[in-house]
Image 1 (cartoon, helix red, strand yellow):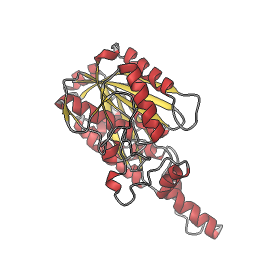
Image 2 (cartoon, helix red, strand yellow):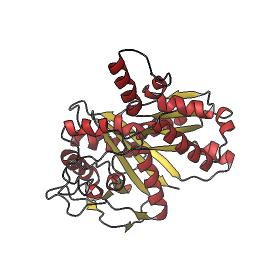
Image 3 (cartoon, one colour):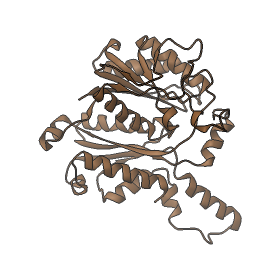
Image 4 (cartoon, one colour):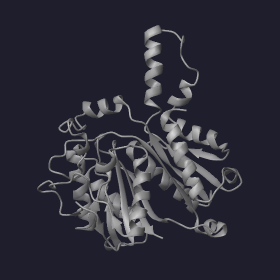
Length: 337
């Protein structure tokens, strides 16, 4: 397996154990597996291409490279690891992949096609990813000597993305199935929405972000005033953070908001799943993590309640947003258990 497949198998093992499922039960119950990545393993692709272009032959080429570099390798390796024989989907929509996997899982459960959906994503860090963002002038470069300060969502000195890696898996389950099994819930995925901006291939517009948030809140049967906290996608880019703040204020007014990217960097495919799980935990304990490195919010940024230190809130519902390159929008409405 590639590094990202190894990470997603570890994450899935922990999630399945926490959900009270045995690996054997995955094939005995109505289960779906929905896990994706931005690309196949970049490190594996590099190894393969360098050897191919150097030798102009297959000499020295590992036969397993293809299985690590295919775009659905995260899903297929996860299925192989658990001996899973059911339905597998492998979404790929850059940094909205994990959130999209959760939305698809919820839709499959809602439609009656399964009772349990194991959802998420994984990506591994590689210099090619940093180069790609640097090429489009979206990578941070002003803090190379102090990298822990480089990712600073909403801050006036932010200058771009800091790439990272990881894996995150959520186990979604219908209420009826969970009650039959007698297991506890971390919380609820109450509503969701997904849309494409249809404009810029680089980023979403404030208008499409706002429309997606409204749709998710309406799908949850809630009003904007019910949302007590927003976990922002906010990747520390100049335009992206500004547009997201504008859209959030348009829909929700001066709502409490923070981004986790300053703590973790941008892991792409898994970030939406991780941030949704983190948001559920924050709702549960009533303490909300601040935006790291947010020292001075950009002047003129939409008037939101930006956290600069841990904050206590009595919030019942939260919105977790992901706005990916290509204008791929996913918004999840979460409720505490």
